[in-house]
Length: 137
Image (cartoon, rainbow, N blue to C red; front, side, top):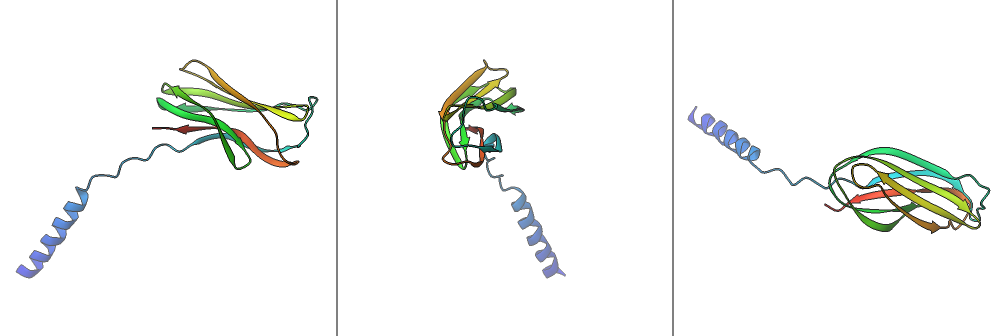
């Protein structure tokens, strides 16, 4: 009986000790994307339609890497420091003669901000394009 009691006591102590182990640190939020797959041509022209997408996103205060997604490539454009809150996030791709003009806008508790770039695609096809926000905290 004493042997059984010691065994149960050892199990109880081990279980209690396991509960006292501090939790591992929380991982940073994952990168957020505003992207879509769309048929794009390698040689666009200005008569083609502009394509836009938008969403509402809630962000924590901090600095984010903000960039452009083309295919599997992520192109960093700038860092942006934001206050906590809900933002409207928009990304647009506008065809011009032989090139695309990409813009992305964040509007919310911080001052509205935008970034842009001129880009191309190497071949006609379905391309993933859009914007990303990578938390740096």
